[in-house]
Image 1 (cartoon, helix red, strand yellow):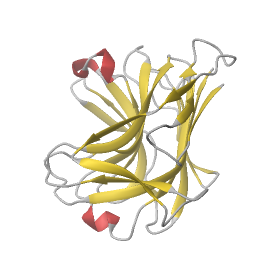
Image 2 (image 1 turned 90 degrees about the horizontal axis):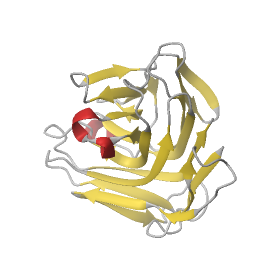
Image 3 (image 1 turned 90 degrees about the vertical axis):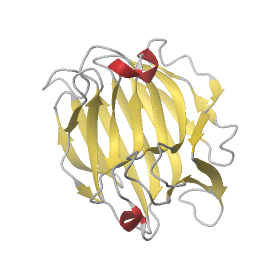
Image 4 (image 1 turned 120 degrees about the vertical axis):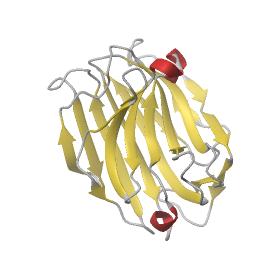
Length: 231
């Protein structure tokens, strides 16, 4: 099992353990996480934190044009292998009233293989304010499916959210779990990828918004960001 931990103290130089399930757990490499921002910003926030002195505030500046504010790192997860990803999430008061479309907060994908054939999945906050695990595929008529039942998530308090998955395009061989504050709240064995392609990227933050529909500014805070992957 390879583990990634993102240090909030500085999001510009973030210490990680490389997550590459093909090289075995003995290979641990410190690398810098990559920040990716479009029409938004990422900043350290010392006013609130889940663990330690700071958290990360991710913001999208609104206007409806596609935008994001996220941290991301490369992974190599193949069919039959597992991934778990988690973060302490703080939705400020008014987040849901400002939200006009789904916001992805933790997402894996393989966009580097080509946007026209990409798969992506992970945890989103739907437009109704409920948390759910989803899968999407650009190669199968823009397939979209919810893999777990919707879960309520509060505003104005820290919530530790974790997704645990075994990646598989076959029902019964896949695993999808959502854990909230250390308790399993939702589970299914529905297929969570469409083809046998590998997962190549893991992202955290305001990963994606509803382009064309999210006109309002929106922000959230993350802390204790972690990812584990391997057999």
